[in-house]
Length: 66
Ligand SMILES: [Zn+2]
Image 1 (cartoon, protein in one colour):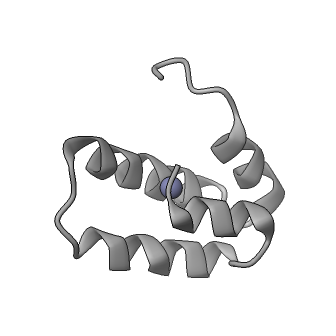
Image 2: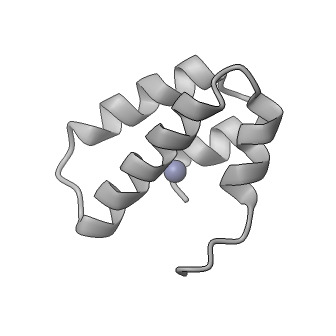
């Protein structure tokens, strides 16, 4: 989980701000894992853009791959 996710879960960011944050982060040099994370979160944010609570649950939920 990255700073954008943490802030979003805390309620500091809206879904729109979270997505903007992901765009900002994508400008930096990223590891493969970070890149994968950004894509994953971006996809979830798109699917749940009208349901922030559901998105929070998904971001916090167990990730079987970890
Ligand atoms: Zn994140």
